[in-house]
Amino acid sequence: MTMDRILISIAIMAIVTYLVRVAPLTLFRKQIKSRYIRSFLDYTPFAVLGVMTFPDIFTSTGSVYSALAGTIVALILGYMRKGIVTVSCAAIVVVYLVERML
Amino acid sequence: MNWKDEFVAGVKGGIPIALGYLPVSFTFGLIAVSGGLPVWVACLISLTNLTSAGQFAGTSLIFAGAGYAEIAMTTLVINLRYMLMSLSLSQKLDKSVRLIERMIFGFAVTDETFVVGSLRPGKLRTPYLFGLISLPILGWNAGTIMGACVSSVLPAALQNAFGIALYGMFIALIVPTARDSVNVLMIILMAVAMNCVLTYVPLFSAVSSGFRIIISTIFGAGLGAFLFPKEYPDEEITGQETTVESEVR
Image (cartoon, rainbow over all chains, first blue to last red; front, top):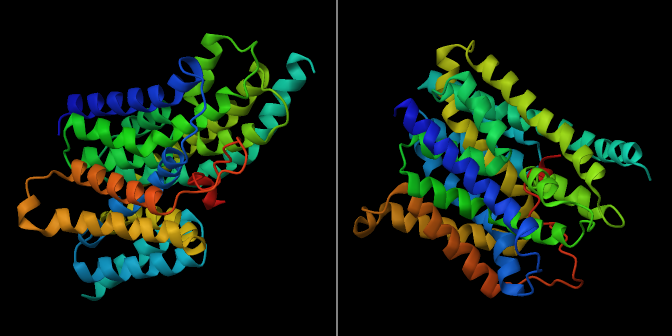
């Protein structure tokens, strides 16, 4: 991946994100009435984060076993409502330890 | 209220947001740099995007070597909720807020600034809006710089384990809400099931990772909106379930 490609990708991300935010504030200032569309927009972040995580998480480390251990720990801590940093760091530590044992 | 008082009121509203952003953007800086990006590029992403889920997703697509169209589509889908928030906020902005000021404030519409701005009684004027976004922007970038700098001095062995960090973050973002809402849980499961089909069924092997994400998301959230449409008792959009980042705090 060349630096040019990375910078163009970042520019695309920035422009798309900006337009999505600013268009309704400046151009069309009407409220969405459709229950369906509003629900869809509300649910989207959860669907997209779930999809970005599974099943890719299982191939994110050196082995499936360490990834599985990290996933389980993250799910448990997430269920306990631990913060984002705690969950992430715990998963990293578990993956590190499991990979050293293997 | 005069200009200064309103600005100060906005800044005060932004303090907890900025503090909440620090650990999240720290993690972003860490992941971006341990994934191979230079420190300045990680900071550039935070400076120009100012969004958690969207820039995490975009960055992991950059790592995966995804095409421009996939990056644009994924960024669009993951950030569509901002459109809803901006729509809602646009009803709350005072008529005196000029176009250029809307264009500046709009850059910093996030789940958190939306919630805090929406909950403030009355119409929102420019000084309040600018005060509100100042510290969150600062916090998001400061955290990224710190995370990015720490990452470059971490031992290589530990950096290897960082492959899971991003996913751990995603889990921390969705599991608490899935625990509270069976509907959200079902939507995540439906979307993930579709993603597994697209990933593992040979027929779909030509579908690239970016489009897999888009198709599965639209499938899950679309079916979910059809099966479990939410009640919106008043005309205010509360954004309660869309506050992805605020679940963190």
